[in-house]
Length: 360
Image (tube, rainbow, N blue to C red):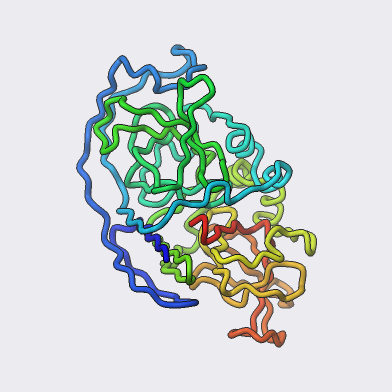
């Protein structure tokens, strides 16, 4: 039986939900790591893409940055390589055009422009394509290269493949094969591994602060803190940049996808369903059931993850993500389903991202 514990809180205070069986896990506080000055050697020519002109970008700077975040404990096998496979048209439907260009077509975002380049909050960076956790904030550092830099990935989460010309090593998500960037070694950074994972921000989704996940392959157990309400707010133009057109229509404009067309309507694998907008965990697969309504149905949500708001006409109750206010669907009560709560959370598939137990 394999167990993963990913902790990103400096003070972990969690409530336990047990679905199939109960495990006891000790979540330890994060390490306080000292501030380190990084001095870049003029010989570090591989800090920028090979195609970049030296005159195109500002010079790399000396920087002083402390490491942030928590501690990773792992007692698990790697995600199954290629365990999240989709045809190209499915990726185009769920990714924004820029995400598709980089994750699926191995593009590169312009240096210094990425959302996470200068972000140093505590949290977890997951794959923007499939939701698999990739990096802890404790391994992020300011390299001055213009892209997010990490000195190590979560065990088994990253694949490394030499480029055809042998000059660089590409890094990809081990679960879905999404392009992340490249890894460089021996540049002289005073980090535990002397490696720099140079990653496109657009390839990542960041989950901030005190969220702790425990995944068990033979049972489904989750330890989660309640997300702070409205803690992930963006302007419409920012949402349009990170969501596909269909995701924007449903999540931000309160649209509805066509019945029986959703990716997760008939999916009953073990795992976690998170918000497609901000990656907050919303539902466990143990609460999903086949209602026959044409959309994914759940009888309960992860505590504190969902907001319920009666619509103006009083006829239905809307459900939204408590963190980013993304529209999920509606909740119906007293329909006679033989579930513990006799509730049906009727959710649009496009509002969700599923992370299977095997890829966690």
